[in-house]
Length: 432
Image (cartoon, rainbow, N blue to C red; front, side, top):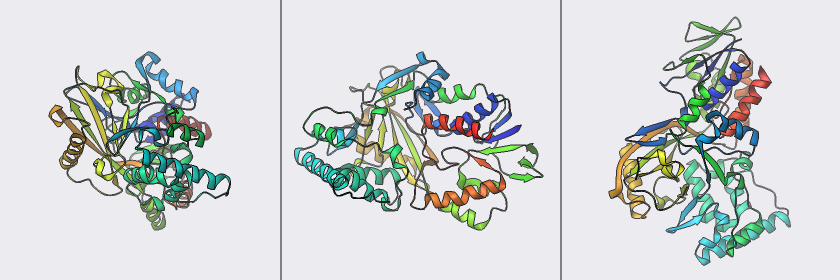
């Protein structure tokens, strides 16, 4: 079959790879002049940064993990032990928060532990049922102490969305849960490790995450760069792209919200439904420093509004010494924006970020030698309460017109790289 894959992010690349390995004629269309989407990297004055935030590789599925690592060659990765912190009242608390209670002031430690135990009691002995919105689920699962100190303000900052209007079906994979015994141990100073499947991760030695993109894309035979798809129609069983090129089948990895721009005659109720599915954009800011770090932190989470505009810092030069010039270091910060909004001037965003980082003694602004920033319209799928109802309407329509969709924003699925690779294999096996 002659198959078009729309979108050259990791979803499009991995699906195209699978199809080509099954001996289909595959054409990959990408609007930009380079592949990678959210996984692209950029080099600015010798500083390498990942444009969509700090990407890493880990997985519960060892087969998928090794498949990804083998793309570069396992000797071309650094393996790291996670060393993540949460900035809370000027102190650095171990991540996840519930496994770092002993780092808190004693009163906060007590309130968080008490709330966690009370929530555990309510679930186990009072058989309290799980709420259907994310805000109440946080209280139900973590208790009022951890909820108010960290989970609610952090998630409000990340999602930029009313947490009471978010569903909970996505939580199992994205919000791992600590056992009450581990939280009690953490509270009294006995070390415990949460989110264990994330406690080790891999990162390319050179070139940032772009090297992973390039390795996956290398075998592809037909890639159309700088080739936006502006029209897509089905005529007599053939798909016509941009009015002239025919294909037997099309797989879209483009954001589903963009389909009305290229597919004509979409029913109004489907267009309205697409418009109702929420997402967030992100500004990623690089800060290059003329001095090395005196720590090996992986991430620093910034939960509260007074922590500045960013919700997370990634210490890129701690991932690889090749991410910064010799003797230098680098940070990237992520700042989310609501769907359909355009961030204020990025120089103001950068200025506000630097002001907080300097005042909090995370960096000295006098050490900054370079900054850069990138905005992505689509970064985080947001799971509203009516998400499944909306996606059912859209999937029914796509099935009617025989248009396949796959990927983070084409199916509105909050997948990391390992999940994208795993799902691409299953997707192609199912349909081809």
